Image (spheres, rainbow, N blue to C red):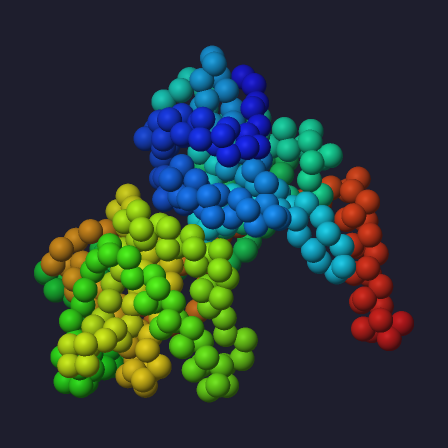
Length: 360
């Protein structure tokens, strides 16, 4: 087996067929590990001036059997600029994929990739691979490998399983947060709302709503609220995915005023709805519209089932755990190049800053 590193857009395009072949033979594939998702991300971010491709391919018998979708990003912290190796798409779930139908096992593929990272310390100052699910084969490899000590807990990722949601063809009331049905009835009387599921490109509309929500919550005292739409490149990325019909949007629509109350957009892939972003019009904020939205999504999925898991995304938010006790653990693999002069300088600055704060 051998390693090939892809560093150009042309090189990325040249492995499209291999990548998509591996997708068909990789267990538990998520949309974030697909060629289409990663190529779309790179198409938007390639001219940012801070990112460069560094995709590791494992080749066996002249055929690509493993792909680690990495990039190098110029990061500036504590006045020091250095190169950080990370996953290409910076998604909520990241992975390294391999062809399970080949005669090489996954551990061998992972070992080849991480050995190459060890051998190329002239390329990176820090490795920061985040949002690796504890259920992934990559996580299992890292836990049992010499890299164990650098593979640490990051955050929870709550999810709802349909087996908890329905009893005898109806919503299981035991999973509903307190007063959810009352909130839904009240909102229904006020708006005569309907739930819409669409793959139509509504990203520009959602951006207006989410930014308005952010300003509203900041003014209400919730400090440091942010919106993904403040980042022009991330905005363009999701617009591009929507233009390709990859984004599914649940919309609670006020039929009396002909306007969106709240939206929740994401991806439906391999039986999972990956929720990415939700936002509500501030005028509806006092009506617990988040609870009503999830309630209506579960009702809709009971009638027209499109997924078995609702992945609420990474983050330990109280409202997510009102709906479920289930969650994935997300991990991070992080290591610093001890030979890097930039990282040595960063450590010295950090040590000095701590000393100043403590008055030493």
